[in-house]
Image (tube, rainbow, N blue to C red):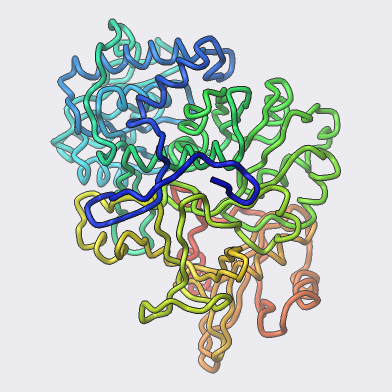
Amino acid sequence: MDWYGHSIPDMRLEARFGDRVVPVFCERPTSIWAMILEAAARNPDGEALICGGRRMTWREVVQQSAQVAAGLQKLGLRAGDRVAVLLGNRIEFVLTMFAAAHAGLVTVLLSTRQQKPEIAYVLSDCGAKLLIHEATLAARVPDAADVPALEHRISVSDDSALPCAGASPFAALLDNAPSGAPAMVGEEDTAMILYTSGTTGRPKGAMLAHCNVIHSSMVFVSALKLTAADRSIAAVPLAHVTGAVANITTMARCGGALIIMPEFKAAEYLKVASRERVTYTVMVPAMYNLCLLQPDFDSYDLSSWRIGGFGGAPMPVATIERLDAKIPGLKLANCYGATETTSPSTLMPGELTAAHIDSVGLPCPGAEIIVMDGNHRELPRGEIGEIWIRSGSVIKGYWNNPKATAESFTAGFWHSGDLGSIDDRDFVRVFDRQKDMINRGGLKIYSAEVESVLAGHPTVVESAIIAKPCPVLGERVHAVIVTRDEVGADVLRAWCAERLSDYKVPETMTVTRDPLPRNANGKVIKRQLREALAGL
């Protein structure tokens, strides 16, 4: 199969989750653990995980994951039970995820930014029997009375002397003989639950099945031509769908190496990327910008870096041009997806990025993307409506929430809530969330367009466009702009006026040095910005 000049493994239509028929890869692993075993068989002595001074081969990863699986089974956990993971970026995160796949358990990924009430809600909603958490986050572990189903707590620490009341050390899980035969799991069985950030009400638990994770991992590997020689750096949170799939399971699929950074710091990132000969990254545009701003950027040898995936925000043209000048071999590839699509729904071939900077790419292999109006009717090419997505990566639904599932899925299509369009050549454009579109006296303004223009200003770090209530026009455009240097609102307004229609130019601005508020998944919380504006 050919995907815009890239050779893709053969696909065929198959029934999924009862009533769906979607294109899937003919030859594929039947479970996440099977995919991990294939990596170890192909590249047993190749590096698999690197974090600080720790290095593990694929052979060692399989053995230690099987030891942890045995420890989990010794605790009485059985296939289908939920294991919650409250860990930062570290090797134990990956071992836990792989061990759960071996034992047929469901990993529930929690963000280290979540607070005690949020954690309590997730643990109760999914009925987790075990929580594996950072010892330093023990204070955020809910009280036993608040999570009665939680039977076990295990803490992870770099300091074995650090006590953690009520929790066993992670080392106890490793102190077991490797578990024997893996648990029997079906392709459609849930492998992971990731709670999506709820803008209203409670977050929903997206159920990622084994087949979803495998399909997405195979899309990344085949579309980006990844091999066992590739070395990925995980600088985004592993507990997010991007970290879990675009980094962890994608490198399992190709048998390459995953270099884990506990947190992103541009100066340290450049050191690690150069030293470890990184070839593949997935980051947000701001992270690339921060790297370029390092005064010693030119002193690092980044010639091995060939794929720079990005998403979540537009990549400023200036950033693309600077990266092209400094790292000619680097191809930037825009990706668009969500937790509900197990990461990628579109990918931009790197060679097309510069010519289609306003697009998030082309539908991934096997993905069907349509644009619908408010009456659930397909719109013609080029018109703006809600993006619906169907593919082998789209999840079966939300954990224990049939109402939300019925509202968000139709015949296998997930309703994204994003407003966008598709042109005659299949390039997808995303303009805004439906709830974030601004209606200024009948004129529609999409925040992504204004934010993209602001991103091109040399002093702007990031921005968020929100609606300011107006008794005459209904809504006006307000910008919250984070800058690295002092700059006047009039300068930024003039910058926008040269590049946007007059009605799209922000009429009021908040210019600050403070970062924008973000939820546990790293998305800007525009509701909080609107509330702050209302309180002024």
